[in-house]
Structures are given as C-alpha cells and as structure tokens.
Image (cartoon, rainbow, N blue to C red):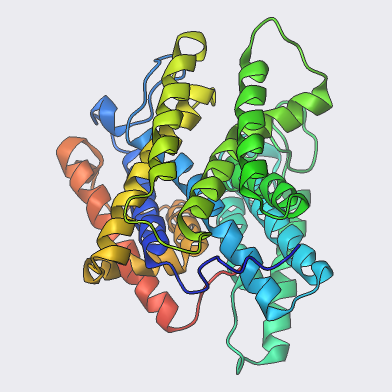
Length: 395
C-alpha cells in the first residue's frame, strides 16, 4: 500500500469535535436508559417500530467516525515508515481488544448464574470493566517499566481468572460466551473487516464505494425472510451491517480530504448525502427503519445524517475557523474508550458495595433527565483530569 500524497497530514479538528460530541451524547443516553418515565423520543425505538430517534443515531455516528479516521491512521503509519507487519500487528491487536472488552461487558450484565459463582456478579462486573484500564493504558515514557508490566499482565491474569469464575445460566457451564458481541465488539468486527478491505484495495475511492454497495446489498439479503445463508456466511454478512457505516465514513473522508485542490462546495459529498437518503428511504418499505434489527434503511439514513453533521462542523471549524467552543468536548475525543468504560466501573463499584449515591427522586422523569445531563458533563471534567495525569486508553 502506498502513501496517499494528497491526503491531509494534519489533525482534522472537526473529526475530533464530531467524536467528542458523539461520546458526550452517548454517555447522556446510556445514563438516561436507567431513568423511568422518559419520553420515547429520548430512548431507542422498539425493534419493529419502523422509526428512529437521536438515540438510535449515536452508535452509527461512532462507527462513521471510526471510518473517517482510517485513511489518516494508515497514512500516518506509512509516512512514519512502519512495515506492513507492524501495521497489521497493531490493527489486529486493536480489533481483538475491542472484541474482548465487548464480550466481557455483555457477560457482566446477563447470562450468569449468580448462585453458582464464587464471587458476586457485581464484583465480577467491576473487575471486567476495570481491568482494561491497566492493560491498555498509554503509560508515559518515564513510567516505571517494571510497574507497567505488573499492571498490564496482572490485568490480563485477572481477565483470564474471570473467565473461569463465570458460570452460565441454565447450562451451568464455566466460561463466558459471545451472547452478542456488545457495542465495542461490534465496532471491533466492523473495524477489522473495513481495514482489511481498505488495505487490499490501497484505499482507492471507487473500490470503497463498491464495497459500500456490497455491504448494503448483503445487509438486505441477510434480512430477507426467504433467504437462508450458511452459518459462516451469515456471520460475515451480519457484521457487514455495521461495516457499511464504517465504510461510509471512509468514503466521505476520502471525498473531503484526499484531493489536491479544496473546493468551496463539495458536490460529491452532497451527492452522497442525497444517495444515502434515497437508498435508505427506498429500502424502508421492505425492511423498515430499525437499529435493533440493523436494517439498511437505518444504516443509510444514519450515514446521511452523520455526513450532514460533519459537513456543518467542517464548514464551521475548518473554513470559518470557529473552534473554541469545541474545547468542552475534546477531553472525550482524546480518551473515548476510557470515558465509555468508566460509567460501568462506577456502576458496578456502587452495586458491589450496595451504595446509593443518587436519590430516587433523580431516577424519574425530568429530574432524571437533568441528572443524566449533569452526569455527562461531570464525566467530561473527569476525563480532563485523567488526560492531565496521562491515564488514557490506547488500543
């Protein structure tokens, strides 16, 4: 694979801003999920509702941003002179880490037989959420090498022990299972499939567009009732649902940044916005709009909305140079995995010790919505502190 000479080689602050905003909203809606008496438009829509809310857009936005970052990540490593072996070792480790963390998170919330486990599910969940921090923390160069290895390998040993301390509900078998892959696991699979293809086609725009078409077609076939795919093919095609959003992000990123001359109006991007919505609404009568089912209408409409949001941020921040407002969201953009994990650490810590920090009054209705917003703001400031002390997860 060759270096993309025309690709921007500086940090794109508008991508960071979109990532930071997405994570902030993600923390808000995750906390809001535990609040009672909240309007439906502030929750995920039911599987068969043929509709979506802004909550159903958060996950697609994160996948889209993962895709937008792929061309820059590969180009930076190629410019640095990393050989293919180094690049692929890093890529596979990142994908595997996301999948592992995702599976542990899923098993911490369901599928266990508490009566047969040596430790309580709350303690199990606390350790499952906490151990990725020492394992994948980006330690500063002056950090003790010996202590670093103790923390990293100690965390790995704890995760291995947690596997054998887990007892499955119903069967009584020992060990966790991918009941489903979890949000991080789904991101890991979609990222892995996307980068493998991106490398094989050397990041060519036309090839990425073709792959996007294949992903949408495969997603549609997978959801067609009269078509039954072999199990192995169904596994791959199932993950192409989320891969389509990552690939859409790659395509839009290339259309914006892999060019010699910057156009005042990016007509190819506008064309794709139209195409995303046309495809999404054209497929709606056949599959409906559903995040739970992962329909092609949901993925394409989400891609269209994400592209519009990014175009606005690009215009505001890269062209008009209005960037100061985004500083509020940047702690999350700089440390996305940790801010995703930390609320789970807090939740299981309180559950393990039977602590009730938030009064019941703030778990219902408007007070609960206000609390969820306040919690999200607090998490951003916590990330600011963590970033200052170099506690940053780096896959």
